[in-house]
Every structure is written in structure tokens, then in C-alpha cells.
Length: 563
Image (cartoon, rainbow, N blue to C red; front, side, top):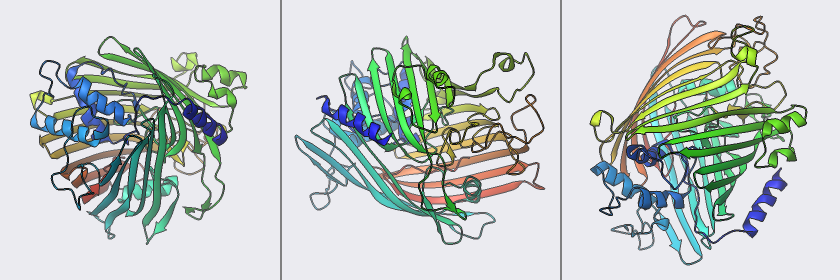
């Protein structure tokens, strides 16, 4: 598989075209919301890129800012003071692709550093462009009922640029020592993996230390076909969560083709993922970890000016097979020809900007389909009725309050969705789900309120309610743990009667208030307060957590503990 991915990259480079392009901007919910809210305000799709597959390329972002958001009559960007601030922040963050002049620093450090607000150091000539920035995350907090001080200490480097204006590159690396809030620690202990990370070591008595890295090359194969190769995460959909493919797991190696023609956008993704981990006691140890191969394609189409529908198909296989490399084949047909040995999922996602300032979005992921059981003809709630649903709503400048944005979202996954009967074919990577942090067998309602009262201050209030079922022991499988075999249940329920929340019923109510102030470009101070309350059938009393945290971060995504 690695040889094939390398071959694809080399073939692409041989044919690389002359259209200027850049690296991808890391997926950051705050950053991407600032981008996408303007499309919702306009009430129509932007012609530059489809938002259903993230992240976006920096040259596309710059083009979006200057061609889609600039008022054609006045030639300037319209909006509140906060909107103006965000527009120029985004433009300066991608200044090398801006057509118009961007601001420079008033006082460059030593004449060479921070000549642009976004770059610690940059060099640019006709053939080579490079931007280097430090990465820092320092946070500390207290959790009620816990003696150990909660903290994070991450240091690293971010580097991006282009060669010959044809090949974009991006590299990110950090080293981290941290002590998580107790519910994240419990999640790690249960799954044997740190969410979003790979190999880790113990730090002190209850902390974790890990090295993080991402990197990719990007280039144009033709005028309408873009390619990307490297290690990163991908996200499908418009929601806070994704039931198709999310950014929750460890970065993985992949090759991606993105073909945009007229109103159509076809994205092909081929990747190699870590199926499981070898442990020495409670932590990972050295060894050749088993691998699996993931193929995904999504075809999106803009229908009219304000509706986008995407249909997808994906396959997880425990061995490499050339058949899945065909970018325009129906994977389910391939699976049938091979004797149905692999895990195929299909479904759709969509968004509808039905009026300026409002958007409806949703997803449907189908894991298995038996007609008589899906519609309850032979019996209700079959264990083979496996699917996941998302429905959401966004309201920009809610209640006519400038820069007050509301988002409501509902997610659910039936028991045994994303699980598989064959080894190393579950919808996971490095022992964590590829979609929702809960895996399956859950319902969830989310409300998010974002407010920017002044340009540099952002207030984010996120609350959710979850109902989910867990297993009373390792030998029992009620369908929530994706690492278990879906055919080995030991529940005594049989084929029918499987309902969401079965097993040990858990209910979680959580709210987080975060205030972020931008001191300088991409330098933030965050103050957050979290409240989490969990009840369960095996708890004598509610498990309540209160967590307060203060953070300083530079050129790094804000960490969230909302699960």
C-alpha cells in the first residue's frame, strides 16, 4: 500500500501543473466557523470550494475571501467591526495567496522576524516560499475532587510553504506532557488510546506524554484535479460531530484526489490506518502494529444556489486490495466480487441554506441493510439495523444580534453500527472511533452559542446531553464498543429487541463556557469552565465534575473535552 501511495504521488508530480496552490489549513472548528458563517449569511454556495470535505487549501481560502466575500458594487468587505476583524485576520493568515496587499508588522523583531503578523519568519522569492511559526500550548486548571493539578505543556514547530508555486508542503510537530480531566483519563483507560494521538508514555502518576506530527504535500494534477499526500486528519460534513468521518482519531497516512468540475465535486481518499496496538501492561510498546486499509469517495453536487447533497461510500479492509483503487467504481459491487469480506458503508450528507443566515444540515450513514428488518416487517430493532443519523441547524447573527451564532445538532448511532465481524475491520484508527467519540449505541443533543462582542474576544458556550449504553463486562457486547466483534454479543437478546442505550444505561449532561482573547495574530488566552454530570445504572450517586482552566496557546487548535 505504501509503495502504491508513493507511486501515485510520483505520477502526480510528473504531471504537476502550473496553477498556483498551497498547503491545507489545519482543521480548527473556530477558524472554519469564521470562514463558513459568511456563506450562510449570503444564503448561497460559494463557487470556490465545497465545504462538505475538510480541510481546505489556503489558496482556495484566499480566493474565497477576495472573490466571494468582497461586495461587487463597493469593492470592499461589508460587515460589523468583528466581521471586518475576522476577514482581515483570515486574509493575513493566508497572505501569500492574496491578490491585494496585506498588512505588515509595525515593528518587525530584529528586522527579520514577524515582518508579517502571521509569521515568525518567512522567506519568499519566485521559486521558494516558506513560513515558520512556533507552536505553544500552556494550560493549567483545577478539577473539583481531584488532587493533581490539571495541565498541558506542548511545544513545537509549524512550517508551510510552496516550491516553484506548484507544490505545497506542510509540517507540524509538538511534544506534550499533560494531565487530563478525570473523565478523559477514564476514556483513555477504557480505550487504551489518547484521543487524537498515537503512541504515548506515562507521565508522572496519572499523566501522559506524547509526540505529535502531521505533514503533507499538495499539488495540482490538472486544472480541475487536486492531490494531497501525507499524514493528517479529514472531516466530512457541516456538523460539530461527523457520523461519516471525523477528526477525532490519530492522524493517518493517505492520498487524496479532489476533482471539481462545474457543480460537481468528487473526493477520493485512500489511507492506511492502525488496526490495533501492542501493549506492555497498560501502555503501548514497540512492535509492528496490525494495519488496515480505508477507501472513501464522496460525490457532492450543488443543486441550485443554496442546496448541496453529497453521497459517499467507504470500505475498511484488513488487507490491501487493488480493486478499491478504482476512483469511479461502486465499492459494494467490488465487495460482492471478492466474496463480501470487507466492511462497506454508504449514505449521504447535505446542507441547505434555505434563507440568508440559516442553514439545515444532516448525515445518514448506513452500515447494513436488510429490507424486512430495516422497516420492522420481520421484527423490531434488529441488531442488523445498523445506521447513524445527524440533523443540525445553524443560525448566523441569531435574533438579529451581530456575531451571535447558534448551532443545534442531534446525533445517534444504533447498536453495533461501525463494528465488524472480521478482525481489524471496525471503523476505528489506533483504537479510537473514526466518527463520533461515543462509537455507537447512543443518542446526543448539542447546543452551541458563539458570540463575538468585540473583535478580539470570542465567547463559546457548548452544552450537550448524551444517552448511551456500555457493557457490564468485557465478555458482553451491547454494541457501543467498536473494538468488539458484532457477532459475539453474549447478551441473550437474539436478533431483535436491540434499542439505543441498551446495556448499562448512562446519561451525561455537560456544559462548557470558553472565553478566547486574541492578544496577537494566532496568540490566544483562553479561560474555560466545564460542568459534567453522569448518571448510570451501576452508580449509586451522580458522578459530578467541575473543571476550571486557563490557557495560553500559539498557532495551535483549542483543546476541547466535550465527550
